[in-house]
Image (cartoon, rainbow, N blue to C red; front, side, top):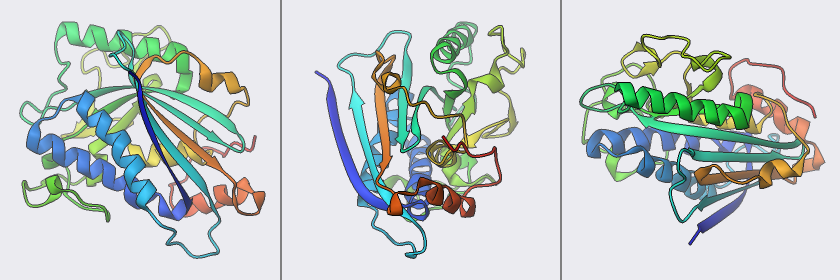
Length: 278
């Protein structure tokens, strides 16, 4: 039987980073302590995003425009063979976007991806190709990074796993515990690895080339900083290729002005691609 739940809250752009960053830090800590698998971590990513954003109350100044944010998680009854681990569906007054995400774990002991075998790399490449065939530039590899390789910081929402169970020794922020890399940055147009030797190259322990923390990608997608919107409603109703779906809907912006919400994102996101206006 398929399971689902959802949360709705009235928020502004300024209210999103703390809970979303906290999710990455929590996942890093959980992986470090319990050596958790990617399925469990992906479930927790969806659950904690829904719960913490659902708990978040409006804390930003009235000058920052607010809007209604609804998050819902759906899990299929059975694991989807050869499918993605997570489907991320995002909609705003400008349209919709659909992401397909394949998740892997950077093992806390070996410090290697758990797919680091000849067969594992072949399977991952097939999965990434399949995701890109459907989602195009919105296909991603999600890597869970153990907390020991990060700096152990917290961002306002804490869990048992984050308290004094290990020492974060790395320079990167703990929210990198959930890091995404666009499939286009890993595979060329023919579907072959761009880096045939390293496949998914690390520039330092726990830091991946072209990697973006989940909280940042989440905001870029929602606030028109990445890819383009479609007004084809069928995009969100296609047959799911993932075991879990996280649906994010932004609606009812203050003053019915989504461009004002987009402008507020400039205070929270680094300079990036031109925003999509429609």
